[in-house]
Image (cartoon, rainbow, N blue to C red; front, top):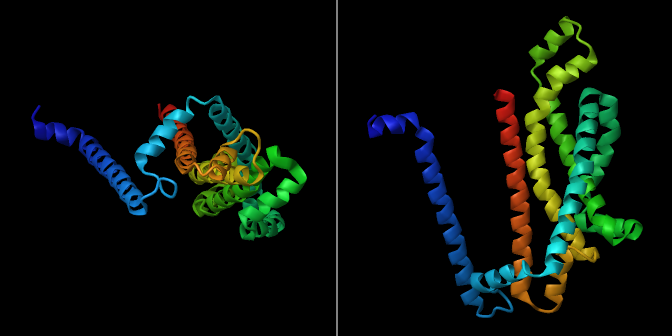
Length: 263
């Protein structure tokens, strides 16, 4: 088989290599700008460069306090998602199929959307304490996102299919199982991806304010109080890496699930 035939048979290989090249180029450019910015400020206390941050980042993984903080923050993120995702989808289905349910839930969505995150964190802290506030705040922020995505998925359901189900007098459970759930699935998956990133941001922001004993946010706050700017950057980098890993695991789970259904 000639080279041209191989390229025609596997067109995705070349595109994948090009994408990887430009991704690495973007990472290199980002590191270069970071280094130039640190040289411009001229002080690691104000804006450290990549190498000092990398040294502190690697040092963190030898610290048991950091590992326990990472584990507790991860559990809070998972707990927030575990509560908000099913409730958001269930309420979204109810609101999408019943106008009365939608009217009841609309004020709650509007209030949560308009309220600053910091205000939510401080108010929750008064009632729930430091350990529960990050989880409940994550729930309040993620729940409307999942519900809104679910409602949008129901609205985008093919009207011809709706008419077909009505003509054949399918039950509500059958319509939900075979019509609406397949229709909302892409919207729910999209909401999961965006909600997971949002959940990490909200949980860590709440941890910075209320400072639970073991948390990434408390580590950031303590590094800032000691004026250890490279360590603060390292805690931030660790948070970004943890969020990226969970996003990657979610994407992998979605891909494997789709392959099983097709296969």
